[in-house]
Image 1 (tube, rainbow, N blue to C red):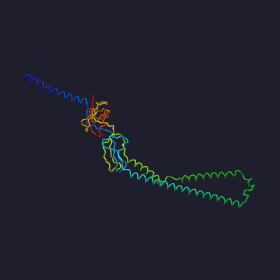
Image 2: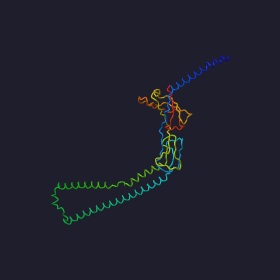
Image 3: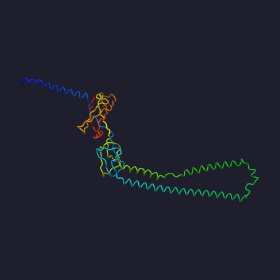
Image 4: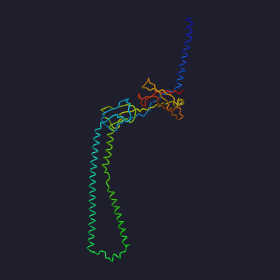
Length: 319
């Protein structure tokens, strides 16, 4: 009986091993047939770098790594005292310059009015002197009645027309002269106004706000540090990221939009993420050219720090 069992065992053992090997081979073939895997994949997203627009000492820092922020949240404050002082100084300088210019304009107006009065008075005196001269020379009968009756009306029309033309030309010239003399904003005032607007902007830049929703991935400064203009201090990962995976043209032929995807990310080795094929960029007929496939997440990943540029592995179910 023992010999029979021993023979049966010796008979079935190779069969069992063969069945297991066949099953493993079938499973591997089925696995690689039903799935297309790419290690040439990475996370994409519009990673935003927050840069300072003014320099100064960091008074308060409200941001830290892995913190979720909303657009408009206050991230940090730079010491504003120097910018306040510059703003107040420019406001005072502009006020003083405007007052000085207003006083000069008023003095110019008074001077012009006095000159106008003198001119009118001179013309009046000149006319008065002429009248006195004629009155002295001709007396009461400057134009005798006989001469008045013989005066041709047509002869009086021409001089009147000429006087009107001369008057129009004089008025036009005086108008042009006045327009030329109109006060224009002094260059100093324009310069101070521009500097004042820039000072207001600089003061507003001492408060740094989040430009978009996301998660802070890098915060490279601390309270008490000095920051410079244009320095990158904070990086924000947008809430919406995606994956770009590259496949050979042969594998890409079996990939279609809507196919489910399993995503493995290096920094979370025991966690698998679910996704779906969003688009397949089939370009050209070059067999050596990789085909980019865009994959989007189908589950909430807001609790994880998925940084754009991180490499991932994707497995697309092509059944």
